[in-house]
Length: 209
Image (tube, rainbow, N blue to C red; front, side, top):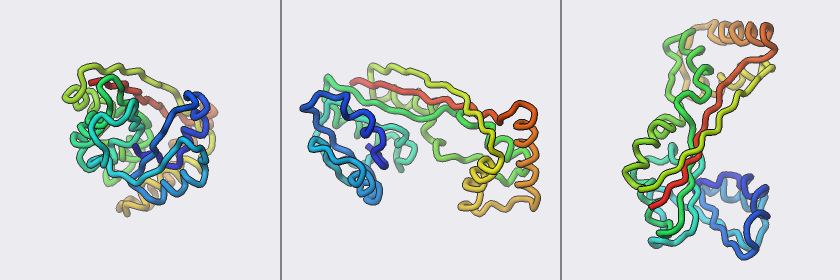
């Protein structure tokens, strides 16, 4: 579910048994076309599908993967119930998302400069902390593995471009020197430590009926 450009399977398809069959779905027809252009394996099929209303019978799949996709669903609870419905009784649903702490300092710095900077992120509504509550309503057996890492960024221009990508599309009304102040904080860290640190925390949740 939410296959995107299909990069995951370019690296991992060869690890599966030769008779495996994969159905890659995404809500975006454009993403499906991109995935098709990159992946050409006989045992992979592509379809446009809405995770809130999957067009598949109950107990259809051995494994259902929804990696970094549920927070895009309009109804998270319904999406999870659909994932559970289409997986076989002896199969599992593999889900990933991010922690509330994931990249949080990137946003808190911006908010400290200007309170008009919105702290709302794509992951809000289905963070690790949300998943811990919601998934228990649907699955009896959940195994969680945490991936934690530190991203070290030594490119000031990259950081400023990234924060602009979060502000400009949403037309935030920010102080005139907002980017200058943000640059000063990041630049100070880079000059002092050689890099700007961004904490990354993402869980993998294996869910069984």
